[in-house]
Length: 251
Image 1 (cartoon, rainbow, N blue to C red):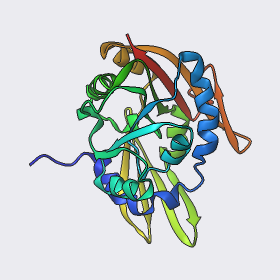
Image 2 (image 1 turned 90 degrees about the horizontal axis):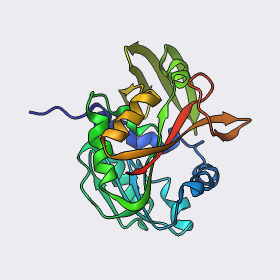
Image 3 (image 1 turned 120 degrees about the vertical axis):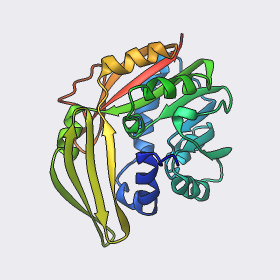
């Protein structure tokens, strides 16, 4: 019997408390900064395919901007919550991004919040990128972010970080790495203890996989927290930034 994917197991366990744990994520602010940065690459409002959509907290800011949303996530538990949160999405499916069917022709396909880092196998990037490319409109954009070495060192590199949300206390414990794969454990009174495994993907590896999937890399942008807000830079730095935002389109 085929074993569930580690990301599926992690987010099925995480789903019940995900929104509380990530309550500081301000999608309205983030998209207000991100979307204008995509306009020079030809971004046009239309249809969005949200890959690894989680509980759907990112839907409302995009619906309010006039986007039509189709979404999917590998975790059935996350999808169940997304369907309750935002009925305005046209469809929300349970799907592994490596096996993504063609849902349509989208002006924007994205996979945010380090979803790509959960692809652990050597050929997984190419599978996911080909599947996402097949859903792009001719001038559509693919956008996704990857964690940097800085973020992995700070949040997966060892030690623990306690946080409290509305009386619930969570512990995120970094377990270090074996090669490019980093691991951390999340525990708390309202969540089943589980582990997150992510693989660091350098820009060169990402861009080579995009090219193999028939996609043209357009940009790699540095993203980091800046005085309580968010900054996106034209250049990326693995030791300065927390994430690298990749932008690509079909060749």
